[in-house]
Length: 406
Image (cartoon, rainbow, N blue to C red; front, side, top):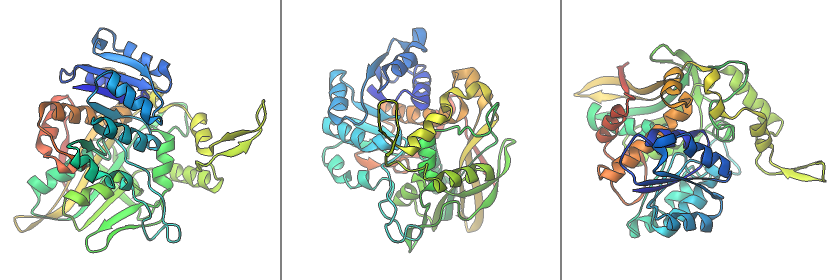
């Protein structure tokens, strides 16, 4: 396997450090718009970096990406950029016949008249619209293969296959007790993506009704997270699992709720009130004349890079899937989860917990594809594959998962 990794930010760098210790690939080309970031990611591997190469590429330039795939003979494209670049990278992989893997799907657009009741363009719709072409070509696009979406979807598949006869509800629940020394507001993940998913209308799925939307931060609940994290208030947030799980797993209801915290929610509401969540450029005065700039990009530029926060971060992050249904005629309720302690991820990989937890899952998936344990054609989510091999290999990577009876 020869992999083109596009994006050398926090997650992309974590991918290289995890993959460096695994033998399943021959070459990993690390490409970024900023060549210094790609070079730094490779240089940090030291003697373990002999299977890695650094390159520059504009993720929005399909021809350049396709040319890079061809030049290095890469048969897989792993997308570690933010969701704005999903479609050009998806199309570049399709044009060259490469397997495509991402951790976030094509962007949504709210319903123009009823944004908090009906779906407009849903997450992943643009990719699924091309599923027939991928299947006809005998090619695979594995979409939503991070931690959430990704591991959370694998948990849903495992629950359906091994733990339940019928499922009434699947709820992805994400929470943490992470703090960052010296910062009152320092998101642990890409703020561009965080704003997108938290301020868009959340999507809920119900059997018989299908997908529908609610207002942001709706249906608050307190969820008790394991391994010392404890109770965290969680709210509805737009996320890919709600669009992926019902395609392959039967459930009466599917939701995604994120433990944001009251202060974080109020900050996001303020950004929205001021229009600082917008992506369309506004014109501002510059030293050399008017400059067009996206307000959301300004917010991102003003905040610390999440990849640099590890040394000042304390605590744990938990991603998991809560499932309620029946087994052998009796009610059952479980929470399948994966916890990463920031102290451990920094000591072992030099990566903060959230980006490491996101990065480990696509590396596991790549290894399963390389060995043939996972295979398929078309545009498929993690639920379309057997869960057992993934969870076994994740444990073999030194990062076990847990199951709690509720």
